[in-house]
Image (cartoon, rainbow, N blue to C red; front, side):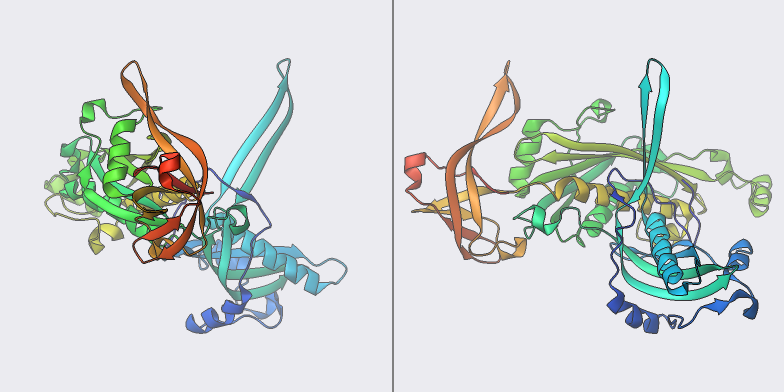
Length: 454
């Protein structure tokens, strides 16, 4: 993956929405246009009347497209759209060009390519490739608009954000924020971190993932990045294996009071050519001529465990490469401007951003779950309150939690539906009270049982 100062190659994600459904909050476009000292064109301009048409600007590199700047949970993107004028209907072509520009902006921000083939008796009967995106433009600025050979070209700058992962109507618990504990990421080979003394990435890298998650409307991250949970790195996961066992993930979730556990491993940070960082005259001359190979790898694994069953619900390996330009003796940290300015720093940051997106994609649609912290007559106590989004009238199903073993090994926990509904009657910022329809003793409701809001 290659990065430049003004553009960023965004990795494809595992979820998508068919192109064309790109909602636009046009009411904010004028405000954003004023703040960026741009304005929407009133009329289509003939290409012959301007100094450089859009096509020439693109060819000469005077008009950059793609991701311009990341801001929080989104990015400013510039894109070009076009549409043919059919039957003299300029307005229809204009609308089609606007739609094409926004679609291209969404693809620049985040794209998903899937393919499927039908084979019968060794013969390829059909092949289908689908390009899709899951993004929306929340602020739009139309920068330029031209008519070239009966084709309208439009340039747009749009602030793109991911579409909601779970539509509000799909889940009654959409207003509740799931808690996620983000733990430290161990470095597999510490000598790899020697260049730049980047061993602090064990803490600062997952901390940046947590910072990205704080902008989520569905998740409540808890940063415990000083704790590394993988243990013996010689037995760290490779593929199709989890880094921590069910019992450990259950214990961690109870300790942190969270629904999910995020852990990880930084597998490599080595450089392709260690000689490129020597202080020899020969190396310095080659460096000035731009002929030294200063490409550096960053490879990391992400693991997400469910804190109520102990199950591994997601794992993924990420690998990027970028030029590391700092001197060998200079110590850097992830948040240093000098580190983030380098292509390598941008690559590392892009992995943290993608990991945060994958954490949200794989946890935000899960049902909301919380443990019963105590009992008070017919009421159960939850250590979750209005900060989490709980409000009076919310109704939780009560489940019995019990451990499952096989041959002396814990497999996880099983949740049994007690056919009881706990109705939230009292809410404080950090805790809530929910009333049961009968005495908890009749159903043997206990501390540690689970409340689920679907």
